[in-house]
Length: 319
Image (cartoon, rainbow, N blue to C red):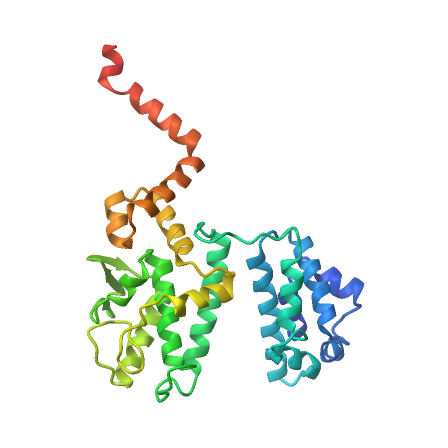
């Protein structure tokens, strides 16, 4: 099972890399893993990029984090690679992260999405997968009830991770997140009120919010706001906490691209412009930018639609 996990993390189509190029099998994989060096992981990353036709830096970075997480897991179950673990901990040029970053940023086939452009579905999947893992880690932290420090506080981390997920769910701006009222979430009905709209929540997100409410109650936090820090204070004014998480995962700090993705999805589903702008807090500039993208994507479809409807109008027959 451990070897299968190794194969999974290595990426789709990488069995040939393990078996053919590295001669890894069920009998020798533990010995191989304990002696493996970053240079091999660099080769594996390049192999992954080519065989899976990867063209975005975000996907490559996600892969490197998955590999890193897998070796931490192996360490926890007794398969220890001391050299690699040291490189994971380094903050200098010898670190695993820096080596992988250099490979990714110097690979000409990999592109970085510019700020303010809408992210795409693949990046949304990467983002939610990673944030869910961080939520689980924060929830399992033994200090989540007692911790009172400002930095590295699992309760505060949980708060900002969930705030980011609400942005991804609704497209609401950060100021709207800060102003969500304490009673906005209906625990029984799994619904949340955002800018006067009552919305059903996905099951997983609803469960996470229920857990958050439970932790707030255990910490005896009193506030008029739903998302609050361990001290009962409001979230910081700047977007840095959620932006930094976004940057760590997708290598871009702007929340605008995330919100544009949601708004475009809403437009494609036929939701009225005024409803979208009220729910998300988006101004005309952001909405118009999203509408232009939809128009470009649907040019021929829109042309056929308009043409067919005009031919159905009474004026068409009169003329």
